[in-house]
Image (cartoon, rainbow, N blue to C red):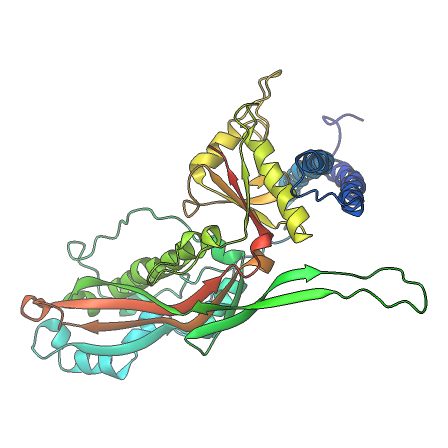
Length: 438
């Protein structure tokens, strides 16, 4: 029975069987690669630093990952078939909004329900009736809500919509509703997120591990293992910005919500994400993953015209050998990802990642590709993000407002400020490897 006469159910069943077979074969190949790496170590050869050993182990892992990639492609085709059958694929449930009606007020509602804001409305200060405008810090997204959003992989900015009947029609001249496109947050979906009640997070990093377990004759002393630890610190930083707004903007819930959620709050979180990846640790900057001592590095072999897919795979192998674990994602800049997508087979001229007509998810060698401008161009950051990096939330996103900034009082303007307090660290550098794609 060929594909043209098979029912969708039969095609789905066939695809599922192919996936199982490919994944089983991939597991066998990966086990063989793990065994090869272990054999090199038993011979006193470090497969991570020895060039010939690394190439041999990388080639062995490559066989396994090619099979995993084939299984991934068929699985994606299966999901398409399931959608045609009207079934929900795994993970297709609607993403929960963190601030739905049953979970609390929206950021705008938090601000507008505060006593200080209500006082301004009662005195008509926002309508130009005089009086100073001062709103002390009000937490529009609590630390627990920030934590829940990051851990649950749900956008913090999806808040409850304001009640249309209670809204004043916005003045489009005061606040244009069409915004400039900004990148989506993705890295925060990958790492471990926790909380802290301190302004300086202290933790311990294992710097030396020398296992000495061995078969030993009775009456003979066992060898001594060596484990050395080094204290490390991650300072909590204040991350924030402000925007000028007219008093009329603060009197309109729709405009306040757009300012807080679509601009100020999102800007704070995007900056935090950028610092997680590439903060240089100078001054008030966080130390990002790419600037953490100890992460791996692989360079593209220009003499042999190495493909981008090949150097990225070497970074996967580097993480496997150094971290003794599997990566969970590959971070890459959109321009670099485009170059990867455009790579072709030199013999057939076909795109290596599949034809343009093929609906595929963003994967490279079977690993999720996080395509974001937060990563530098010509760089791919392969890592076990969940195990290797952590963020600590000290305080959720808070907002304050004042007309005391410069000449805002006489101009009837208000400075609306949003900020959060957080720390971050790549506390397991060996979980990451930077691939130079240039």
